[in-house]
Image (cartoon, rainbow, N blue to C red; front, side, top):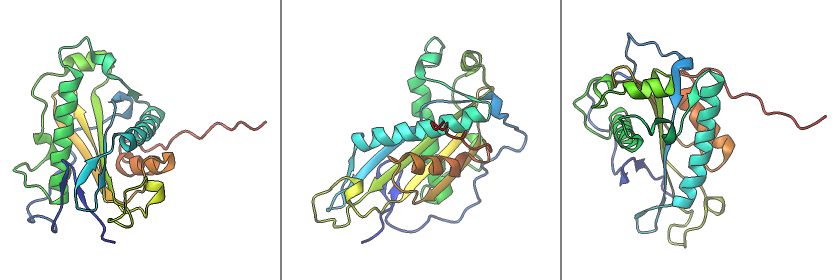
Length: 235
């Protein structure tokens, strides 16, 4: 069975990497990100299923399970390193609607992931050229943070026999090309100041352990401390 590739934005990759231009700078040299001043909101997770005819269908049920695990893994990493998490209600009273920021961040992360993978042309030389078009000072005050961590995963599965009716991942020979990317947005000036992307077969993100490994692969540099040990119930 052919391994499938997924380009964020629900488009399939048909060929190899794009042109070899200058590498996109993913770290802004004059910016030091203190993990204690970092806030992480809900991740953007999309899970699709390849059909036997090559079609791509969204799977909200798989997406919900995967998103729950990814969010839990991100929260564990960020908080054990001194940062915090937030939900849309935490910034509801500000002048920047959460939905607007989330749409912008998702689009920016898709563009950056594509540029890093060589699958999308970009005139940008640095992630710092992506900037939110409005002041985020009210978010800075509301979250008591200087940076927001945005995480995005796109995932797709196909069945072992593409001609057979599609079943759940547990009943299929798992093959996927996942895209995971994490970027940090400065609440001081709206720039993206740090990104890390990984393209690898992490496995099924609906499994908590797999989600933890996938998140760790893209945020370890930013949040070097691992998750806190599980509390034992034994006496």
